Length: 377
Ligand SMILES: NC(=O)c1ccc[n+]([C@@H]2O[C@H](COP(=O)([O-])OP(=O)(O)OC[C@H]3O[C@@H](n4cnc5c(N)ncnc54)[C@H](O)[C@@H]3O)[C@@H](O)[C@H]2O)c1
Image (cartoon, rainbow, N blue to C red; front, side, top):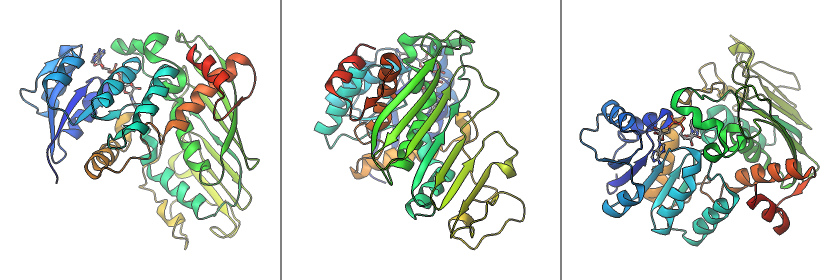
């Protein structure tokens, strides 16, 4: 364990109070101050985490000036992320940021600029599926060339985000930004992770729709197509408005194999895959009782593997994600999820919005003309 890391923790709502409980129990972490607008939320979270008399304030800037802080931990509503992250990075303070990185394109640009200009300041955007064991095995299979060239990849994100009670801010553009930032970027982050093993993205084409079931201001329904330099295509079908359950459907179609994950089936049927070598060319169900394989990668898909099949934050690898960032701060090694290293995930979200507005394909990296349009969204 290195020196004690002093944390300024912002936002103790649904995700924040869960993270606070886990983070505060990690070795060498001191929660120096909690920034919250809702004192009741903060006091409840402090009680649950057993943090005694930790100071609470609603003034973030004052907290940063008053307390010696090593990490600003941002779990506030989306529209506050960028100001809090930029304020901290400008003072040389490390930043853990819940997704999205920002709700405006200009702030996204500023975060990347600061992250690049300050290589000793660590940052991480919490694209939490990166820590999911099934996603990790899938990436390993792609790296081992078990599927050959990926021609098509579909990853959906359909999940009715929780807008109950004080979470009603998630309907409003001024607070939530857009539907990618509110959740669809989880699927995009997995598309980026898998496809970057083989190809570079060339362009994004997207359409969107306001289903108006629960009164979202920005369009909650998105169809995003990403075209790659090797001829491959990835598609993300997203909907944060209304759905019957959580849909993180994956369909990877390669020249030598394929992988399907369907979060809505009975557990034993959720994964099926084939590979010329991995399964002798047969479709198999590795979660079926009694299934056996001699392939070391297929063997990693066991009935107790944590699947990405739940919209409940408690069902995700929160502790591992938090430890990943603490390790990045302690070692000074930038996370693959730093603002600049993960920028493509956010850029695809911005390109999708420009594409849907202009009714045309948007090239990546975005042109100065498209960046100008994105700044006005
Ligand atoms: N990575 C994931 O899987 C994941 C999952 C859930 C939520 N999130 C993200 O976490 C963030 C919080 O979401 P949530 O569901 O916990 O929302 P929430 O509404 O339950 O919590 C937000 C908290 O921030 C507080 N707050 C509001 N204004 C504030 C201010 N000016 N200063 C400090 N605190 C303020 C609210 O009082 C509330 O307690 C969002 O950005 C969301 O996108 C990420």
